[in-house]
Length: 283
Image 1 (cartoon, rainbow, N blue to C red):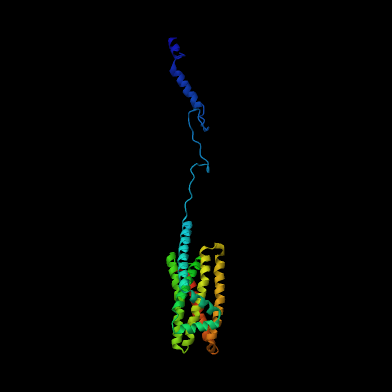
Image 2: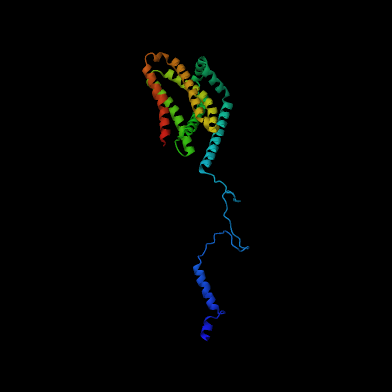
């Protein structure tokens, strides 16, 4: 009896603990899915929603926008330099510019101006002609950018190459004309044609100034139209110039039509096509 009483003692702690362990094994454990615990002092962090962050992330400046800004600054400085040089030349050569416009419009004034400058040289006109060559190089640089072409990724180098193309085109033309005048007995006519090219170049140089300003700072949607508008205007001026040139060489055109067409294709058209091909392929 004493042994049975010891085995069934209700106040024995070990037996109750063993019973609770067996009960806990039978009941499946449930996962705590509630986001908050029963402890009222337990601080839980809630996930932040996108767009509600108090700290705003500043947008980074992309290389494209920075390159656009640097290009705009480069164009601005370039235009300021050109306008300064042009204002200086017009200040000291105002009468020469006025005479060039009169000679452009009137053939008699052109012949008279040529006779006045024949013995004294044409250096004042050459200064304005150099301004035309610089403006033409800038126009070539800006218009190639409009159509996505460039001589180089470096803008300064691309501008220098554009200026070299402009100077090379017209200086080469004058050299070939002088060579023709040296070989054939047309030296006087070639000299008059030199002067005609210079006068028309000065007029086109003045026309280039507003077009370069529009290409540098105009809206992108109109840039191609600006380029085509200038080319159309220059085309009309060149047609007008060829009529005056034919008046100079009228006695040779009757028997040398083929040579005249050969000159047009070789000296006037071919260099422009070569420059455009070089720009498309890059250097």
